[in-house]
Amino acid sequence: MDSWQKAQDWEKQWWGNCANTLGEEMKQLVYANRMGLIQTRDNSTPYRFDMGGRSVLDIGGGPVSLLLKCVNVKGKVIDSLQFPKWIEERYKLAEIEFERIKAEDITEGGWDEVWIYNVLQHVEDPKKVIVNIRKAAKIIRVFEWLDIPLSTGHIRSLTEEKLNSSLRGEGKIENLTGQNQCFGRAYYGIFIGKKT
Image (cartoon, rainbow, N blue to C red; front, top):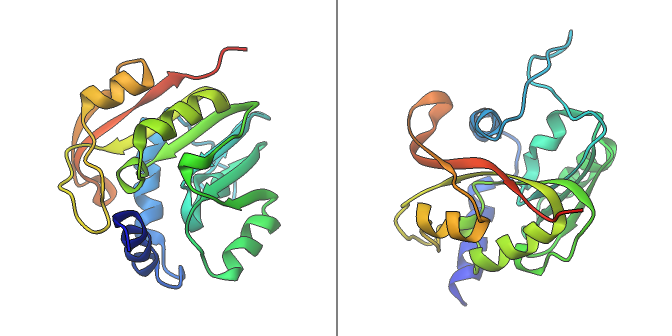
């Protein structure tokens, strides 16, 4: 079994049955803020993002994509993991497409935005993923962790220099010290993708 498949098995075990995902969803609110998404409160929740009719491709959004907290959006989640059947039904009910493929195999195009958050340390070829997402949308919103030691679940250690080079821009760097259980050196920003 190769390192990517072992990482997939590790990640699947980490998510378990996907019944209690609150911790990850709270972290996603930090990611969303750093990626420039603005919360629009309504009577039922403050955790809502009005996308104004834009289309968004979420790469590696897992069982609880930020798209589930969006309104006025055409969305699709791409993830390589096999989740419980009810996750796909949840996306279907929310009118969000879901496709199970590797990030390196993305051939999508025509999206307004691509979102990728806490994903690139889990893929086989981060540079190839970035090449693909740059072709997929006009805008790329990114949040990734830097300098994470290699492990079974984290098969790539990302650096500021490599991300800046691949994304053709400069990300912001911040040392997070516990907001919504986010700890570590974060890289984030909004980058230009395919020009129309």
